Amino acid sequence: MALARETDASLEGSHLMLVDGLVPRPSNNPVWCTYGPAPNCGYLIGRDGRIVAVQQRVDVAAMASTIDSLLAR
Image 1 (cartoon, rainbow, N blue to C red):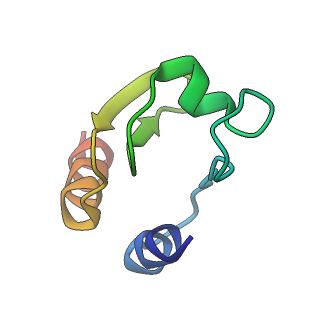
Image 2 (cartoon, rainbow, N blue to C red):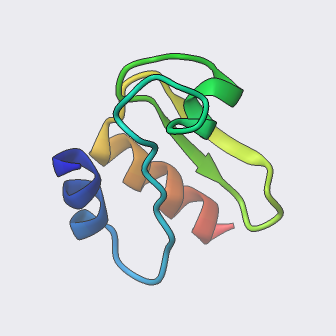
């Protein structure tokens, strides 16, 4: 949760962040179970519901840069 808070604090504007549960079971981790198991992975999902970017380990600065690039288009 600390990484989610750090990412949220570093991003400006309106956004939605979802965090899976901490126990590796389908009922607790729907994203992890759907897209694949990886510790601290991050997915950037566009408004149309498609995955725009995937990080195997979330890098806050890189994710912010990806978001900025997408918004500049």
